[in-house]
Image 1: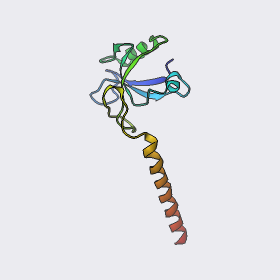
Image 2 (image 1 turned 180 degrees about the vertical axis):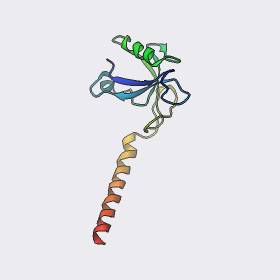
Image 3 (image 1 turned 90 degrees about the vertical axis):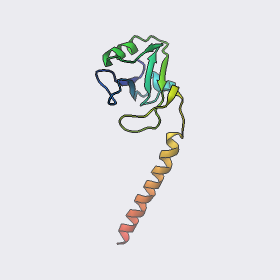
Image 4 (image 1 turned 45 degrees about the vertical axis):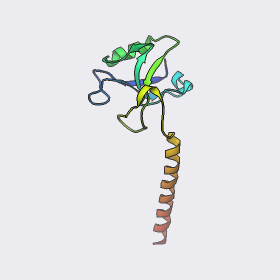
Length: 124
């Protein structure tokens, strides 16, 4: 397979009033993971030039299964990672800060705050 799972379609909308197809999971060591360009939350607009608009979920799955060895995807990159439905920006171009640039300092601050809180409680 291509190494990723999809959600969405006219019969299984992932986002309310949006029947688009989205990447729900990248399988570790699969083709998409090894390629590195596709990301969870990306909206897939076309496969090998075939538009995915207004397809049922199972029809989209069948297109991916029959895509062949060389697969071309037209995607729309998500604006920011988050749980649940995601926002998007145009033509598959990524933008903004890398996720690690936001998460690493945030996690460091959270860890420091927990450490301070625990030290404060020990003194009481």
